[in-house]
Structure formats: C-alpha cells, structure tokens
Image (cartoon, rainbow, N blue to C red; front, top):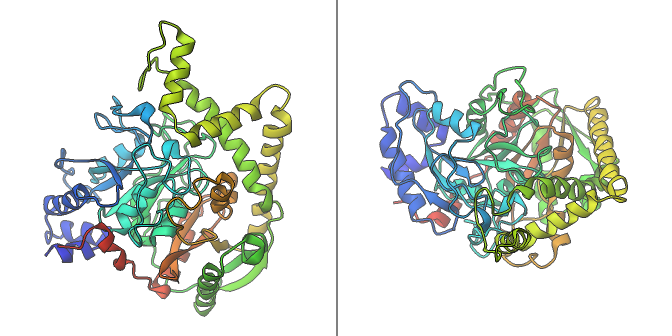
Amino acid sequence: MSQHLLELSAAQAVAAIRAGELDAAELFELYRSRAAADPLNAFTWVAEDAAVAAPAGAPLAGVPAAVKDLFCTEGVPSQSGSRILEGYRPPYTATVVAKLAKAGAPLLAKTNQDEFAMGSSNENSAYGPVLNPWDRARVPGGSSGGSAAAVAAGLAPWALGTDTGGSIRQPAAFCGIVGLKPTYGACSRYGMIAFASSLDQAGPLTRDVTDAALLLRHMVGRDQNDSTSLELPEEIRLPSRGDLKGVRLGVPQELTGTAGGIDPGVLASFEAALAQAQALGASVEPCTLPHAPHALSAYYIIAPAEASANLARFDGVRYGLRVAGDSDLDTMYSRTRAQGFGAEVKRRIMLGTYALSSGYYDAYYGTAQRVRTRISQDFQSAFAEVDFIVTPTAPTTAFELGAKSHDPLAMYLNDVCTVPMSLAGIPAISIPCGLSDGLPVGLQLAGPAFSENALLDAAYALEQALAFDGRSAWAGGGAPA
C-alpha cells in the first residue's frame, strides 16, 4: 500500500483524499517516517506528528510540504543553514508557509540548505552537505538542495525553496525534478531570512509540472507585509496543453553550446528536447541576449552587496548566537560573526562591503546595476520575437562532493544559465529532459514577467512528451516499503 501511495503525485494525492479514497493522516505518516529516516541529510527538522489537521474542504487536502530552512516557522527551528541562527525558533511564520497551511498543506519538515542560501552545491550548510539521491557521492545542487533531494527521493511529496540566482532551478536539474522561480514579487518574501532582497523569490520544487502549478497557486499574491509583492494578473491554472503549435522558442547563443560552456552530454539532452519541442509543433530559432555573458559578474556584485547589508543584523545582540567579548561590544560582534558565519558567507560579505565602500560604489555596484538594466532590456527585445527562451538549466550534471568547494569561481559558473533570468526578475522553470551518464539533465524555459500560466502550459506539454521517469532516485531515500 505504501508503494502505491508513494507513486501518487501530490495532485493525485489531493484528488484521492478529496474523493475519500485516501486518509490524509496516513499519507502524512508515510512521508514523516521516510523523512525521519533521512539518509541524505536533506532535513534539519522533521515533525513528530501533524500538529494541525487541514481545514475542512481545504484545496490541498492535507498533503504535507517540506520547507527550506530559511522560511520562518513559528516555534520550529529556522536557521537558514547557519550556526549563527542554530536553534532559532521564530515567533511568527513566513507568509507563503502560512498560506500553504491555510490551503491544507501542513508542515512536514524543514530542509537543509547552503548557509543563507549562498551556494550552488549544498556543501556550505553548517549542518553538513546534502547528498544527491541519484548518486550519494554527488551534490544535489544549491542552495535549495535539501528540498530538491527530498522530493526526488520520495521523502516529501513537494517542497518549498527559494531562488536568488538559480537556487531552485539548478538543484531541480541536478535531482531530476521540476523547479519554478516565479516572477519577482509574485510570492511574498515576508518571513524569508534574506540573502539579496531584490533577487530572492520563493517557489515550488515538485515531482511534475502539475504539482508545481498547484502549489504555486496557493503561494502567490499581494502581502501587506512585503511592499515588493504583487497580485498576479490571473489565477494560476493547472496546465493541460498537449502540443506546442504556434509557440516560438528562442535559443540564445550566449547560454548554449560551446559559447555557454555546456558539457557535451548536457548539450545532447538539450538538443534532443528541442527536437521533441519541434515535433510538438514549436518553432525553434536562434536569439541573442548580448549582455548575458556579463550577468554572472553583475550578480556576484549585486547579491553580495545586498547580503552585506542584510546580514549586518546578525550581531549577537538581538537573537541567535552570542560569543562572549570580555564586556567589549566590538569584540563580541566580531567573535560572534567569526564563529557564526561560514567561509562562503564571510567571503560574500567582504565582497559586498568592498563593492559598496566609498570610492568603489559606482565603479562596482553602480556599474553592475546598469548591466542588470541592459540584461532586462535584452529579454524584452527577445520576447518581442519569441514566446520563451530555452537553455540548459546548468552547464553540467551533478558533480562530486568536494570537486569545486575549493574553487569559488568554478562553483559560481554553475549559475551561468540561471542568473540572467534572476537579474531580469522574470519567471523560469526547469524540467528534467534526459540523462547524461546516468545523471539528470535539466531544461530551462523562461518567459516574460507574469507569464507563469503560459510557461507552465509549455513545460507541461514538453514534460508529457519527454516522459522522464525519476523513480530510480527513490532508492536514495531508502527503498519504498
């Protein structure tokens, strides 16, 4: 019976519960027991039981969700993968988590992540690296690696992550699942422990595109606690499109092929997916994003600059870790931050502080913001000619643990295909499109702002045709009972 329950997508489980064919408590306990046995280090906390039953008639019917550690959850550890917040239990809950609970998706677990969402491998967590369920010697991607690994391994039916420069899409690609970064502002950031406020956005990590649409439907909307949040022009629909007739797909030369530094196996899967899109009726044509090669450089100035400001609040005074400073406040500050922050967080704080310093602000931060504007304009020009931009999600498949941890630049290059969309604030989705040497490859589709429904429809049509089966990763979460 548990094997049958595990094979249900989240949307199918919702339908079964609402039809009286499945008990929500039984489903919660199945996933709770699997999460508690976590062999991937995907979780930092697992619920002991379903503390609150789903409201009667709730649209998500009691199907539980795993939530990234940086979402504040009242009374539950919310540590953002950092020692400086170890054991911190907030007095309130993030808006998107509260909205999902109200819609009937109770909290199953908190997922491991790169510290303060700074990383592309989930090796920067203060609580140890997450393992990829396809190959436990490899990374799951980051920073939402715990959420991606949990869904891929069948330890959670779906999960929440955040995407600043690719932190939903890249781990989704590495773990063979679906990851969606919505339009910036579509989901409230209230209660998300901030990394880079002009880039951070919550989104779903799910087994398929339908689940992504269903979860996103109950996450979006204006929130008075977040002035950057927006009402979407239309309700998120469940996708149903069966073809891609009339859809124009643009392939930017700057982010594909040898110019984009894409591995041959990844490129082969990408090109096969494009051929499948053409078989579904889409036109595939080259397009250009001339400033995309500068996106990574701009991002690694803007994001650390915002982080240096956001992380100034972690000083040992108000909450979190405090290291004694011999009654000297400055010493207490420095000792707390030295012991509480990991190496990557310190690196980015220093980079960001330097970029914002007197005499360098305009040369670095100001220039990066001007590049960001040009990148956004490039997308606007491209979308006048095509409906969606398509690229590989990541230039490689999941790499081995430790392979890039001592080379920050090599690690940062993992974000080359995802960062431009983040800088432009547009929605993008990663779906699995095949295997390279037995490891999943992700296909990224990006659309204009607020095109989530059209994007989900196109992704759904491709998903059905590609028919990727990720169940071989379930053994990574312990063989189904």
